Length: 341
Length: 254
Image 1 (cartoon, each protein chain N blue to C red):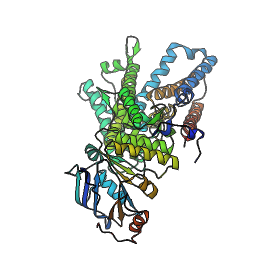
Image 2 (cartoon, rainbow over the protein chains, first blue to last red; image 1 turned 60 degrees about the vertical axis):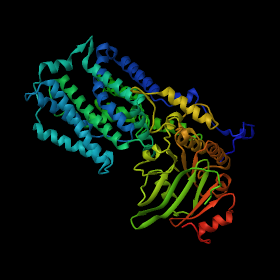
Image 3 (spheres, chains in turn green, brown; image 1 turned 30 degrees about the vertical axis):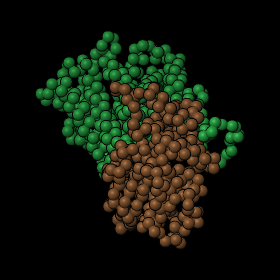
Image 4 (spheres, rainbow over the protein chains, first blue to last red; image 1 turned 90 degrees about the vertical axis):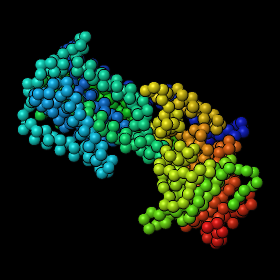
């Protein structure tokens, strides 16, 4: 126990000598991963443009954003699940199943808007099953969702016999490839999802409760927060949005693809979340960070392709950045929370 | 049993409460009577049933038998939220704080104020500032994450939360001094005195007999799941209490 120097100062009677200090601006900035990420984004952009000036062309940048959006739609609910102290590995195969089942419905006599809703519902149901398995059967989230991932990728093959579902209704396809007011619809969908999730996380009681849940599950329970109901909503959201992203992808490519999604979607989404500064231990994270993480991912992929560098290096670089980002988070947290113990 | 003539309403009474976990009898015919405006200490050795008693009062456990009354009316609690609804606020030993969230949020856990769809952040911070000012806790910013506070500061935040609701008439404190230094212990004691002055009934589960004799008006001693003695802190002695705790003295209450 350290003795504080100012303890002998005279105080009003009854005043407790435990002032709560204000955080300095520097320390508050230190707590944000976004700034570092923006720096890395610009750095990568500048380096790529120096190697091949076509990287900076607006067409190419739009391509980067378009690629990032699909990851981002999956990563938004995943951010909340992770902040809530959970984990969802199953999003990749729910993505595939969402796209394939919506495509199946609309090629089997169901009008496409309803087919979209049904596809999303399939994802939501799978998310619900995840939540039930985790909370009632007490299987850890990573095992539950890994199991779901494998199971559902099997279901997709069983269901389609490995054959892509096409052609899809032209109206549906044009929704995916078209633009509104010059902005591609796909990007609009991503922005709307992003804004909605940002507001839910930062401004609603649900968002506050999710943070409490992930920050200290026992404390959340003791304070009467309905932890299981929160879990259920988080996983249902993750399933629904993963399926929606799969449907968006189907609309963009014009078919319900069996090979879309899978591990690559799961891994990019999780990486985007973690690179974006969301803590794997729960409680901390932002949607803006996840957006930057998703963009960084797409940017690096694209930059290396434009610069004519083997995709092999892309994986190596992303692996490095991921570990670096999480290490930076740990160091930062340690520095923030260790001083006053 | 203390009853110093003043017609103090019993804030809370527990009579003949028993609780078994499998074949372990954690609580056996335990009694407790707590008055408003008094501080009631529950002491006893490890395994004496203090925690079980606290968990029954805070709604985490349901007693197998016995009756619980709050302000004279019989109640049963199915959850901590029920207990809270009856004006019982609990400060758990683990403090139940979320380190990565700020002071204002921690003071409102489980009860975040809303304005339409969104959290009423302004009201939350204003309430937090007021509650801390009420308890004379000097505040720099209620936006400081709890993880940056010292043990004593955290304890005070946890207590402040328990009394934040004006309707919390009964405050349960589980080992409030366990992790604190001498100076911090004094601060917690100050706050207990303030709560008492506000007319709240305070129940403290505590190992620290010095603290109990400093701040408690009534003392209930537990031993092997029974409440073996109900004493007035002003007339009893440390030796007498220790006698009951160890079993050297036989109880009259059970």
